[in-house]
Image (tube, rainbow, N blue to C red; front, top):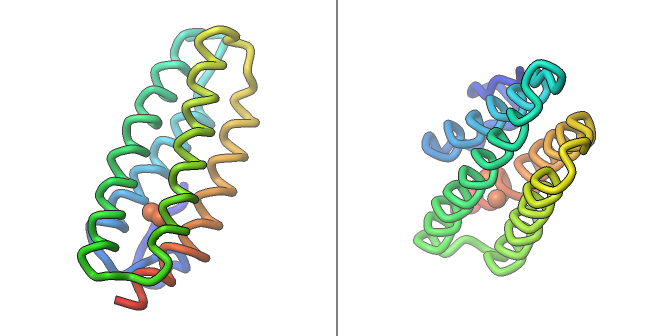
Length: 128
Ligand SMILES: [Fe+2]
Ligand SMILES: [Fe+2]
């Protein structure tokens, strides 16, 4: 599991944001470890949790960015909104078709998280 520490390239330097980002990697691990055969409904529960946590994190992060008047907030918010929509899309898909690939979701989530934290969150928080 990716662990965010002060020497990690995913470290933003803002404690609450780093700990919330860490929670995403915990959820990512849950998705990767999920055994569909043993628990066919389990993935839906994890994606529900991911969906709620995503909305919670984006709200926390956007409030902080606004409070510190960080640059390019609107662009940042649009990226968050697109990600929230994508997770909602997966959530609805799983409810109607439980055969969706765990691997597809985990690859998408990991790529998005690492890219967004490194290229958007860290830059935004470095400027405040
Ligand atoms: Fe962000
Ligand atoms: Fe973030």
